[in-house]
Length: 218
Image 1 (cartoon, one colour):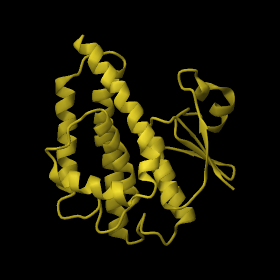
Image 2 (cartoon, one colour):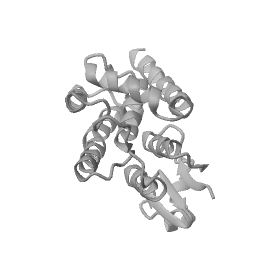
Image 3 (cartoon, one colour):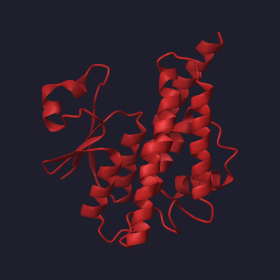
Image 4 (tube, one colour):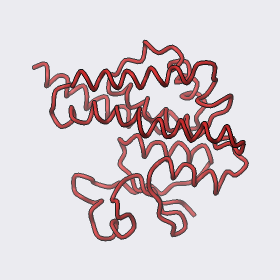
């Protein structure tokens, strides 16, 4: 039975869930929501997810949201022996730390810097520097590691690569971070279905920010 995934196409968090499902060879039934049309505020969706956020999955009647929580659930249920979420206590703790860093620092600063621009605000230099600081931390975390944690692809990589991919699509320079670039190339080549899942969303984000920059410079 396919797992229902309520999503929007150009969402880093939704992409994370799709990458994890691909790594586990799970079938997803994609249900696209029109957020501007308030699909997420309809009674039937609110009954399922009172927080009215995406991504949301329904797995055999079990509703769950928050992409990194979904990632853990999918591996715990369908990939118990998978290195995607190691059973070693210390390694799992490091994977959780990287996931929390992505959620609380990298993705948050990405959103704080770029989302206001989507709404028409000018770029905030101070917020841009905070985003640079988060990228510097990620670059340092990757020093001496093949992947985000150790030598195997984990759900931390799949979450982080979603955020970094959308940053790249929004024309945020990554060239100052050699460890990050090396890791990014590796994950793009080793994460199952990366190209298929990211090609169109990255193109949509890139087009959106290209139009914004053209409008701001005119």
